[in-house]
Length: 404
Image 1 (cartoon, rainbow, N blue to C red):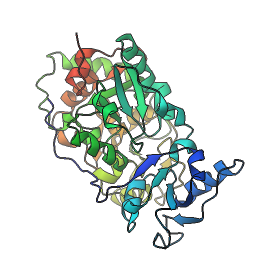
Image 2: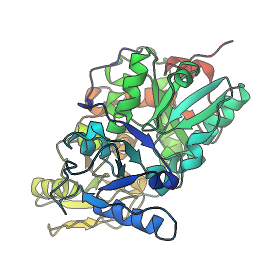
Image 3: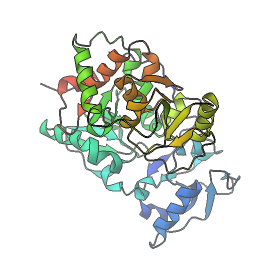
């Protein structure tokens, strides 16, 4: 069950000396600030009313300034402070001689999650590496933490770019990453591999996401162990499990009634690793919108933006429109759902409407057995509202082990 398929990785070409820091570290020596316009603006807002030392220079990573050379700065007396950008590791790796500098990641202070990363471990403990527990903890990982406490095990958080002592890793009962193959995990993954310590992954689940989380020994989405699983372990009544979930998930939601005979197009976050690593639409959602409108010039199209996407997009076709209706409602009245590799596509497959995918996903890997795939996804996840975690399920779907 733990035979992982080859996946897309982000190998680091340099041994970056990164550590998580708070505002007090800014006063230790001069520093150059590196980030995109939005994160740099947020950084200056953060330090405006504090005694934190300002940067001696700011280097932009989004095209507002072309010079990202550090040649004029002495690495013995100058640090590099990186703000909260989604591609910070790739950005840093592209800078000449960056490995000579001490790099401070200020994202925990900017996201107000610094306290999560400094709990003193009390054996036994499991380590969860997460870039923003403020987003994940209240709804998902808190339930896992509560269940672990009942087993006499602590859950401690660490940031993937936080310097972690090897003994702390070796003494843990297990290591879990929230999310998949994002580049900021590479440093700690390399350390774990050198120590021969296995690690697992977790992510919010399905039907609905707010109620579930799942674990995996290989990764999330198409990097999950399910990608190469023959699903022979499913119980014989898996179709009844699927039918019950379909009823629970869709029956309370009325079908969309404003339009008929349309194609529903759910959009995603452009910087999501699922888009960047497993699709061709790496330039953003406008690229995908234009593609869809050109593909269906005479059809009624309903687009829905990702709920966390603040971007504004342009629809050009006369039969295109936006909707804020629930995805379940839009799915129930659609003749097809056409997306990249969105979670909404799994919801559409559960309902039974035609699904078209433009990116790699578990639906592509199991395109002739959607029912089995969906049943497997349902059976492996844990209900965070009910706290139905189990040692047997976690042992089957992760590298975590538990003593009897």
